[in-house]
Image (cartoon, rainbow, N blue to C red; front, side):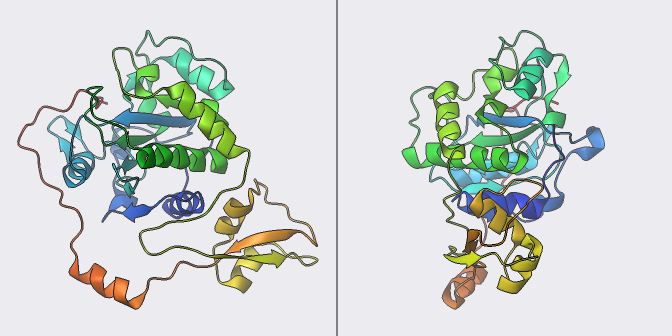
Length: 293
């Protein structure tokens, strides 16, 4: 179990893993914490949305429905691999599931079949909703599958979890079928392989990052190096696979991500461009994939 990440740390972790991130307005304080605890956290649940269209999907996951208020996840993974952050804290995504499954996730052992709904999953799991109709015919694009892999890996890397901490909604709650169209075992294998290496760094909604090499000097700390290089020390830790308690040694050579900078032209364009719409759906019935709290 672990303390949930702060918003800044989640963004840093995702971008260090090469995820393109879009921070939706208000996501850092958007949650359902009034309905129950958030944390300690134990894993990640992957869903499909039973929706189409990124703007529509993001709006639904932010706002929810009558009787199922948003956020419905912490991040929406779009068809093009972009992760839209929609909530921070408790989210209405996992619903009640099998306590035996939770214990297996914590121990990172093979999952039993989900046969009970006796445990509140919204307390214990980060949730990513993945844009897909969930009918078995809507194709999963390679770039989206890779984004799912990278996003889940980023969360696991921060908390020191293995790939066994990532499950599908269908593995948590009886009667659920999501995510449909790819195997969770295969996804966990790819996450495990990625966790063996260092974060590959990469995209963000505000421009990419570059990296240089820094040699640690005597008595230096990650926070001190971050201040010197004008970058986030957590990004340095992520880029180099340095786990808590973040011990570094003199002479150690580390990749040092540079702070992301927004080009002037991009900033001007961003001011003219409105964010994805957040329409309220006219059909007030929630898609089958979403779980009531």
